[in-house]
Length: 552
Image (cartoon, rainbow, N blue to C red; front, side, top):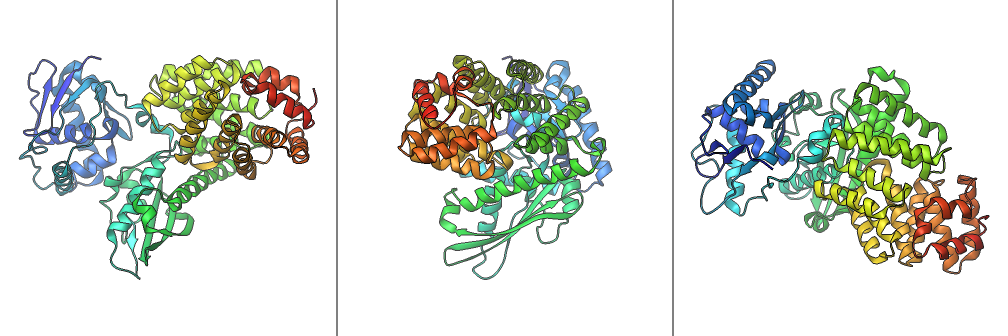
């Protein structure tokens, strides 16, 4: 891909055209380019840039200064390079796919000798970055071929910030423990499509003891805020965690958690995974409540999206249909946005998976149309490629196309949990059972947020069934059914696993529940419409279902 700009950040800071000619920039414009070029995906929020570069200005003055700076910067960059700089109401984006960045080598200091007099927030950021690079190798630099991917597309996602957790007695002053906990919680939240997560480094500017949620919302542009307090004694910690509606300054969730310090330090704390899951579920539930009791036109787009995603997981036909209505309304408001296009495609696939589709072919056609539109709108969007893979594997039985789509999704976002999960299912359909279990286990470790956990457990049960891990398949199916008792996928896997492990009576009981959840289910439908039937074990599974009482 053509490189339009080169940025030297170590030693004397400089911005250059591709031919090596220097771009003459003032100190504030250099600082702006430094902030953008060091950001993940080249993306910073307007609120962060305003606060960092004009910390002494009033909010409206800072907004105007940023607008002027961007206009001037584009003029200095010239017509070609200026196309790399995007801005919307919330974010400023530098397209790093066409920028060549240097890396930290030798003893060169980050932005050597640079400073902005009186801009204490920027100078603090600069000092922290210099210290970080001086401690060791810099974080891996994004290559020119890398795509900003999902970050550019977060406009419809609700934004959330995690404040540094305050320390409480008893125990020694453990400020690092509180900072570590809030930083790890930020990482857990960022793995999900439920939120757009404000950088933890940006959140550190706020004093958790005195700041008001509305102040964080106005400065950082967030909808939700997580705050907390932690105490530590005897190798264990206790954390009090609150979720705020930052705009309305309302606490909508508050929980207490306990765990051991060692697992937290090693980055494998089940406490944080559980807290992350509950935060996502609470925010989704709040969105459904708003959608139910307020006119749709008065809601923000991200509230509609969260409500739709939550309602899609329901087995109740009315609630599932309501998700379609919400997504349709959202598509009317945002007709070319990749997120509602993608989730509408998932809705049509899930209607088939749940046994609710009156016309499988029509839902397949509409899902494919949504996937193509989403990919056309954003070719690098990992979730859209995941949707295309799901359609290819579960509806078309084209496992080769599915693998290609999942690989594209994971190239954009290696932590795309749903792509990992569904790729694992596709491997199971092709008699690669061990690989399927590894892939679905990896997906589950990414801890999906909100109401989707049952789906991850259901697909993981299928992978373990293909590996003949019948006990594990039953365990995962039961976990899925605890959340969604009428979901046909885990009921089917559980019935097969029970029958094939010699527990015929329990298998027949499970089949009765399966037929209650999906009255039209029969062996001929399974063999015709289900990709599991096409696996090398498919005939064995069909026999097990017949023996457990599924009609022909």
